[in-house]
Length: 200
Image (cartoon, rainbow, N blue to C red):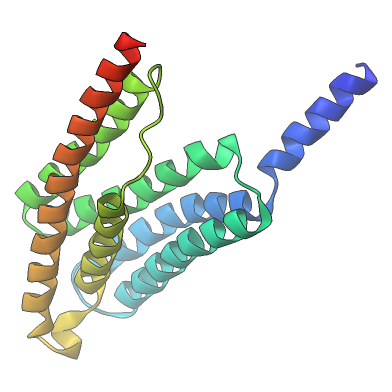
């Protein structure tokens, strides 16, 4: 291996093994633990449910933290651009599916959200030859509301305050509405991007 090749390999390795990317990988590692805790609880609203709450909270915090560190220190990498949304979708997707399996969230809500999420991800890859679709303000708001809704759902609300179950449902409905609306916005944006790319 030449010196230049060695320097490139070292640079590539350091691009991956920085703090934001490590936090992203930690979030991915936390997903199976979160799943196991929620399944182990099996709707008993006990200690395993609280363990799932903690795992979800830590995972969500790493999402905010890795983004803040990456922007502040200029550590935004290609690996991070790919791994970060994958980690988010694994966490959010597993939470929605499990809540539906446990009978706590209607399947139609989970299906609509997941079809939108994976559909827009596929759309991004489809139009990437014409340009990159950046995350919109609505998209960022969608992520926040989804996270709050899921967090409320996985809390053992029946043991804390039963009326919060209703609050969780309506927050989830708000998340669903924003998710679908921003999905339409991204489709329009993708069509415009494709048209502009073809003209160019």
